Length: 142
Image (cartoon, rainbow, N blue to C red; front, side, top):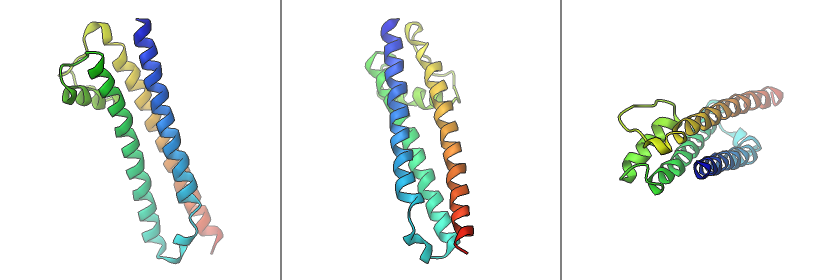
């Protein structure tokens, strides 16, 4: 049991670390990009939001993959595709019941779901802050 708790804490830490790095890098590279103002504002905003959404989705998929590989390595499932499928359905809180962890590993699923909810919430907050700042910069430069 202690081993599972330590594994879950490690995976949560890894998820938070990946998300923090992705968000921080986007903050530095995208919000601070003044050279993009020479193009059509709508296109720039659309491109920047596309990049933010793509990077965030990639971050979430990477985090879910960490959990899926961990499920496979600890014997949660017999094959990696099922482990990844279960992980993504848990991380996104969809929670299909067609793949279930063995009883001794079941506490990992809800912990992954809680991590996913927090990471999606963090992403939502970031998107809102990013869009607000992007619009405020355009207003202040008019």
